[in-house]
Length: 267
Ligand SMILES: Cc1cc2nc3c(=O)[nH]c(=O)nc-3n(C[C@H](O)[C@H](O)[C@H](O)COP(=O)(O)OP(=O)(O)OC[C@H]3O[C@@H](n4cnc5c(N)ncnc54)[C@H](O)[C@@H]3O)c2cc1C
Image 1: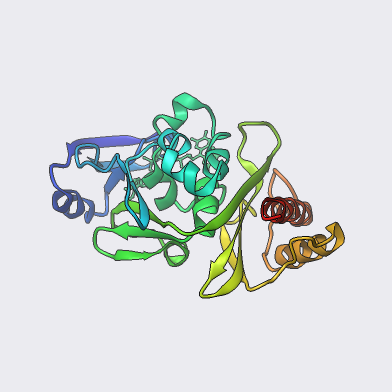
Image 2: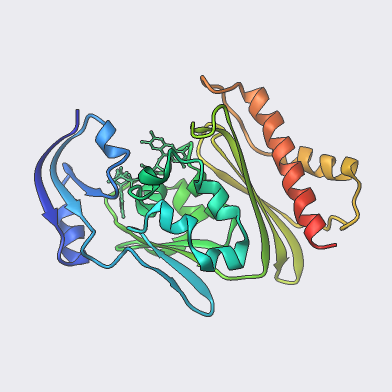
């Protein structure tokens, strides 16, 4: 059971950060995950009064406050216009609408959960995280760091002309994913570049970048070979939802479908 001694609604980010430096303090997002744990928390720090619940769009970026809910992501018009239905697809299987109205982007990214659809989706895009103490760093770098006592303020997606696809396989519609894959394609520094992010392996999402020039009219066999190569570069593990071998097979299938879909769009 989770036990909490003090609740503080932080008035400033500085106050939240200072309070969080104690070993027994915790920042709260939507509490959807934390409430299932067994921790003894001395001070729980609520960030909900700090204006971190907005999605802001500028010419170059879409900035998602840490206290935005997964439902806000799902309904965000700016993300839809830029990257199609991929982000909504990544979150729409997470439990149900009421749940997604509470679970936050900050909790989802900060937790670096192996099963995270949210992490898998953003990792393949040109994404940064803004930390109170650690500054703004690439999400791909943040993913590799161990959780510490910093506070995640926002997730920043740089706008660029990239195609984005997201797919997952689940044993039932709202279960954790057995595997989750994002594929992104665009011209980066003048070169055609593909990004592959595979999560729920069951380890946390990892990113692969390839400068591949796949012809728009590539045959299914050629696409399948690229997908095989991409899927083979990730490691997979076994748990109650599937074996490593099964996951690798599923990753290959999803990546093939996503590459095909992106190429079809460009024809
Ligand atoms: C039954 C169930 C099923 C789920 N299924 C899926 C699924 O299929 N796919 C998926 O992707 N996710 C799934 N999730 C995870 C869910 O989407 C959220 O990621 C999770 O609940 C954490 O978000 P939260 O806002 O509830 O964070 P909390 O539970 O409040 O916090 C989680 C952790 O993050 C820390 N934290 C929160 N916000 C910040 C911040 N701003 N800065 C620093 N640290 C912070 C907290 O201290 C805590 O350690 C599931 C969760 C549950 C309970």
